[in-house]
Length: 65
Image (cartoon, rainbow, N blue to C red; front, top):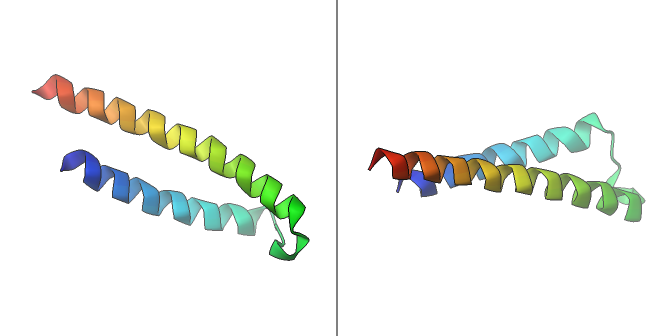
């Protein structure tokens, strides 16, 4: 379906952003706790943004029907 395809594309983009963020912020996976805290914060922020975007897309798709 349209929304499932969008969800897959957004998840791929999210993963690419996550990799870029780790590189950009020079996060060292060997730093354990600091790394996990930063990654958790990043994950939460972008998961919320992803869900909001999918809600908007669902509303737009619903309004077309």
